[in-house]
Image 1: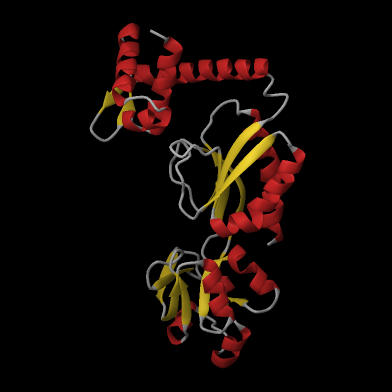
Image 2 (image 1 turned 180 degrees about the horizontal axis):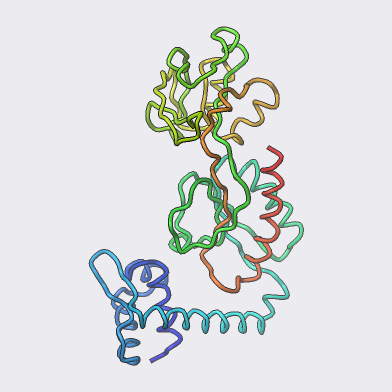
Length: 301
């Protein structure tokens, strides 16, 4: 039995949460994954995992063994990369994913600087508003906006993002400036379906005790932030978007932010990766390079 191979398979089962996910991630038949783990358990004379139809869980012996195996494999991986010179000369392809508009406005400029600084690294930037699975989709780094679920991924916080309500000066002149979220009942709105899929918008209570859902009256519903911001700038209604999505329109005066005192808690923004322990050089230098620059760009908003 190849114990290093068995350790690798066991860790992938634990990290992905199931035998089938580990099989897909490794490109190994499910039967092989199950057999390798069983052989390792037989070799050790101890049960490492308990299996149900929906999930796996580690036994006490499994928890101790997985921690040791992870340390061993991380040290081996670091030693091999050091011997190959990877730590001294970052190179290879880096796959990064980000939300479409945020990626175009803020991630792409950072990547352009990164490519100039590291000529031996190539980047494939996948812009999508769907959260890709880092392991299954072979993604090295991801930008995530929003609260993160419990995850095996490693996250580095780079900032936060307000959720704001905006209106055109023309609309505010005609209808008045809303002083409270309840005033939206009498005002036309443009709804960005991806951010607010229902017919309500969330606001914080003035006393800070949670949030409140306020019904809106959409004159128009659209599926992209750019369309929502454009329509609001034309005076079709108030719009609720993330701050970066309307920042240019606010800067040039075509939209004004209203109801700022009732904004919900800003959403965290993270750079995420799935690799634990020593990172491949291309990922380590990108994380160091991008995190600070993204923080600066977000702070400037």
